[in-house]
Amino acid sequence: MLTLTNIQKTFGIGTVNEKKALKGIDLHLDRGDFVTVLGSNGAGKSTLFGAIAGSFQPDTGSVVLDGRDITALPDYKRSKVIGRLFQDPLRGTAPSMTIEENMALAYLRASHARSPFSTVTKADRAGFRDKLSMLGLGLEDRMDHPVGLLSGGQRQALTLLMATLVTPKLLLLDEHTAALDPATAEKVLALTKSIVAENHITCMMITHNIPSALALGNRTIMMNDGKIVMELAGDTRKNMTTEDLLRAFHVESDRMLFSAE
Image 1 (tube, rainbow, N blue to C red):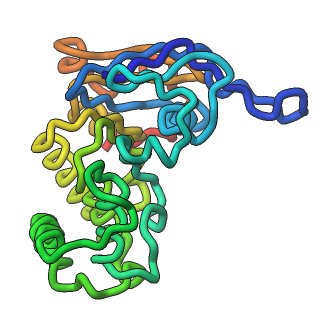
Image 2: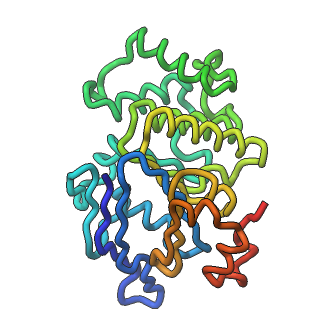
């Protein structure tokens, strides 16, 4: 479904700030895989997502999605089939536009059957309302409210819904609950799990929370220094504890960067 082959990326080539961010990444995801991604700051996690989403062109290697080589495809074209959420709840929505207007933009951008210049129908708006009601946040009664008035958790839940209004081939979640309070983060994670499972979405999620990484999805990868240094799946992953994982990667010095709660 997704195949990355020898993805390499160096930023600031020839300068004092030269940084080899990705060092020959090889990774394959089958359709329906939910892969959690662990690693300390600077390990290359977000850069990996950038390579997949088309934020930049890799120096070498290829990105193949659903049998199509998209390595040279610009990010705005990939956004039709790749949904992405960021750590900052303020990203991914237009604050001065209403909830309905934001959802309409997301729907028309990702829909293959509609032009981005189309207008949403009465049936579309009813569908938006039904989807919003599933969040359990009362947003279906605030569709004419500017998104900028929403809380961080409400905006992140809305962004998650917008990214999956038209089921993407791949969903990238870049620490999308890290900026939320624990109770809200738990609710958004539960929504994530439900939406991904219900729509059978292939998903990758970056997190610093080891228990969440081992509990969600069916695979976990650990990155370090621009490389994938370990992958866990099946019984090995099921039986892995936080302490075992920290010990396996020799990252005792980075313990404060991870949440073991």
